[in-house]
Image (cartoon, rainbow, N blue to C red; front, side, top):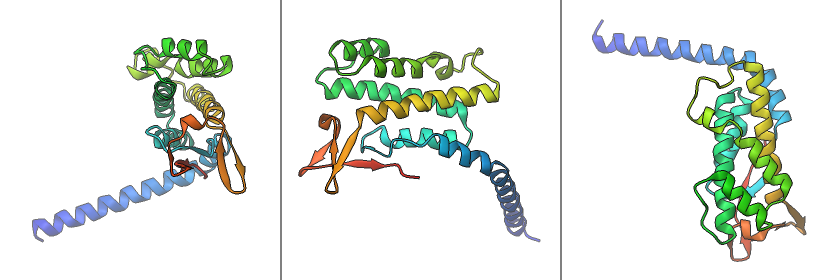
Length: 192
């Protein structure tokens, strides 16, 4: 047998093994994924912005049981949202996340409730961002922490990107947070 045929046979066998392993893992975790998907549905419509797909991905990571990724990505989205809010409200964001939150709260751009949710997401940020030795390693505790942070993000997005629908037209509560073109807003749909 030539080296090419042996190589192709080896690749085909390896591909079949990987496919089988992935199918088994998916089947074993399907019920858990369904349950997590039901309990962590994202706010369905948000502006089509630079953080929209990343926010959706954070929900997918949680659904699929990737809790470190969920925590880190949720914290990154929260940081992007804070910077976005500063910019949309007319000032350059500070480098310090908490100073930006304080500024937004002081200027009545976010409520105390939203400020508290942003702070909850940020808690432990440096530990997860830098993978410090003290980060949580118990899988059940990680799942709860990831769910808590993701729920905070959903509630933030639900308020900031609240809308009503009138005669089929989406009407944002805070229009300045949505990019507009010819009287229409650009949206990112997240319906699973």
